[in-house]
Image (cartoon, rainbow, N blue to C red; front, top):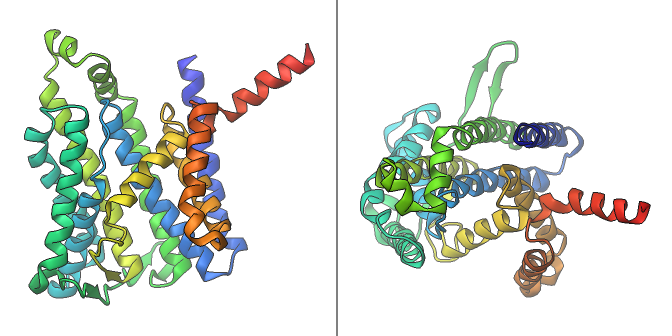
Length: 327
């Protein structure tokens, strides 16, 4: 049964990847290609939040590590001339290291206290970037964040990733590789231990599991991939702002948690489905303007009440309904 579920997850992931791979071939509108890039970035952010969710905790401060990755990669490339292929990993590594350091005091507490700490930390990072004019540009922000530029790829020749479609495929590559790594980690010994900690952390400690250490590793991995997503976001947007209404605000993290829950938090692919479905719903309802968040909220409430398993449970619901009708 478990192997069958893994095969379904893998098949679903491959199908999603194929769809995302071929979609730009049929779309020439720059706006929709840009939206696909943002969908990929949000998928990575949501999947990295899921890692923390496996331990039974909710974080609303993931945008803080996204901000660290974004500004680190941008500043290294703009001020010191380092290559994008170096700075993007520096951004992810910086976010991972800071998450690793913060995890020692943070992962000693649980529940609402942990959630509050993550929010305060993210807002502290955002306010620091918003007011540190000499480094981050302050309230003005950073402008002219460079694109990856031209790269010689075997069999493909020289590719300029400054174009929208080219950057989309670059983002898709990094996100797909990251999702594969996150999926393998979740289904490894670490994933089993995190789930054990979620069910009974005290009992896990009594059987020899170093709960604090595994929580620290968990938080650091999540921070690393959030930093990677931030770096990808920065070089796509070409501008960075730590304004409260920017992508580094608390509302972004709330949306990420909603994506995961509505998509189906019990399945790895749930967050991916949640991001795609709710983003498209938001885009098609853009004409509603100020009522748009209310629509997303209403959908989230309806799904939680009617389908606790999320969007991933729709096929099972259809099969159950079909079997009842067939009887």
